[in-house]
Image (cartoon, rainbow, N blue to C red; front, side, top):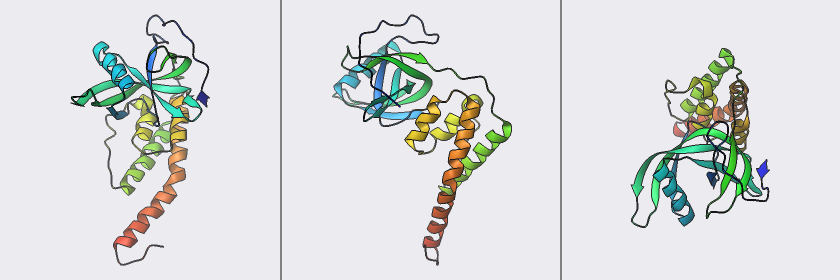
Length: 220
């Protein structure tokens, strides 16, 4: 679903708790998940201004999916981890990382960049079944293997394993957006298992076709 309510001026929330002060937003054609890195090249004047303030104040900004009819209702705060390059004209290359999910309550257009009053999205305390987690990891590792890649899962936060697994693969943005909005890790793990199992047969066929094309056989 998209958020396109008419913008109005809103007061800043006091304290962090469940809400945040006006959060600067960076609408992008991506879905940032908690714990997932996001490399960015900052070149537009409004976003150079926004990122400059975030760096100066050690403050987060919000990454939210840009849609044709507006923006998504749920996004993810991003913390700037490192600035990898600064250009003479003020452009920046940086790496941010997803932190906390938020829901847009009200938009604010008083600055050159979009801001919003947001509410942090909490998780319901429902622990996923161990067999579901094991299956999610198994399918994830097989998909990586088919692509000739490996990943160390030892550093993954087990309370948000679903985000870690989904964030490391180029999955459908609609699925990632739905995952971001889900309120329990149990629900998310089951969704990840279902989605990865649905794409696995095609990936297996593609891998076999590549093997045949690289050998003496012929791909069909």
